[in-house]
Amino acid sequence: MSKSQDAAERQHSPWLVLATLCLGFFMILLDTTIVNIAIPDMSASLDASLDQILWIVNAYVLVYAILLITAGRLGDLYGPKQLFIVGLVVFTLASAACGFATSPGQLVAARVVQGVGGALLTPQTLSVITVIFPPEKRGAAFGIWGGVAGVATVTGPTLGGYLVTDWGWEWIFFVNVPVGAVTIALAAVVMPNLKLNRRHRLDWTGTLLATVGLFLITYGLIEGESHHWGDVWGPITIPEVIGAGVLVMVAFFVHQYMTRAQEPLVPFSIFSDRNFSLMNWVVGAIAFGMLGLFLPLVIYLQSVIGLSALQAGVAVAPMSLLSMVIAPFAGRAADRMGGKWILFTGLTLWSVGMGLVVWLARADAGQWSLLPGLLVAGVGLGMTFAPLQTIAMRDIAPQVAGAASGLINTSRQLGGVIGSAAVGALLQARLATDLPQAARNEAGTLPQRYRDQFVDGFSNASTGSLHVGAGQTGVPLPPGLPDQVRQVIAGAAERAFRDGFTHAMRLTLILPLVILATAALSCLLIRRRARAAEREQDTAPAAVGG
Figure 1 (tube, rainbow, N blue to C red):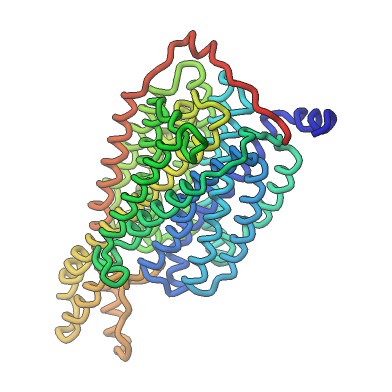
Figure 2: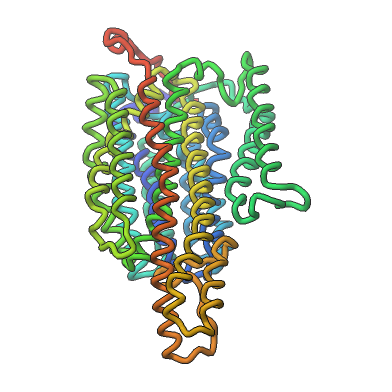
């Protein structure tokens, strides 16, 4: 690279680079929240059952999770700018393909490609921030980066609700196209061409082991409930698939340890930092709680309370808006006083707030009934983003920043996969009990000849055939019914679905609440650094150019 080119790249403020990184990160998170708010509409429009909806949500997360470690290492080897731009291109094109999908299978396939683009992009954001900002400003930068999560969560439900209500679910994906195009142009101009590791060697054996192991584990978790945790491929069972994935991951870590003197996919040195290792667990627990809580809540707001997609987005917006406002302040406070107690307080408030949301959820609730809990949760959520990243990445060397970023993002996505799969499985198991019971309670209002058929219809909830689209009653009505009888049955079915789903949801959401509370207590183990050591810390300069 010439001196003039070097000067041209160095003249861009790190805050401008941060804005570009955040715009790409915003698009990834916006896609997640928009997809969640559109679940009932997609279920009705594509005639997708609950297990198909779970795949539409999780196909992206599955591929995203298994490629993050490799993508982070590729950023170390070939430069985060290159990987960031490639990821943007892939994600943007895949988003357009999602919008044109006409069946659940097509949408799942396009979501897989989205996962590839998201995985290539995401680790580069944290690694670049770690390199271009000095330690004393890193907390504020991470606070802004974390605040983007708040912006995306407030924009996703409201923008998504508007698009779904007035334009259709396809436009939740089409909206990524202009955002992606703008971000690609900005990244090409303002991002520095950092080269964090000049040895340009990828651990292919480690890459293969990590990819296979993570795929088997996440696939088994996602598919477990739909196969009743039994046979999945011929005589092979779901527990055997998950067990095989665990064994492959053990082989992966053994291989990484044996090749630690060379250039492994995961540098073991980063695990010597207790805070980094601890934050990997905490970020996974947070993702478990977030995805585990949000999926049933979206269905509840639209299919139980009867809100439109836009109304549901507006209902949860106060939580996201508060988190967006608080995150930068929490980041600056973490710079001054350390992040341990801020993170602990934030996770505690978030757990308490979401517990209040679950307690307030009733079948006859209104649009604003959950507001007190959402406000408390929003304050807590805003206090988690920046401190967590600051604590995790504070002592990470620039040469392995991409690998560390890939690992912590992998922990986040695996936590989300496990949370979504566990809560989805528990919800379906609870629905198999609570919906028939609610149907039996309502059956007395129906003519005698229809009562058994009515209860049997709700008993299919555990098979994955349950439909949760907005305005649906959970089960189809039999054809050929007289209008008067149809109205009576439809009313009873709606009441049974509302009561059964609400009861099942409230019991199911105890699980993510327990995980979040455990994560909050784990923060007490964070090791605080002496203030003098924090002031003396410095980061080795990264090489610029090829």
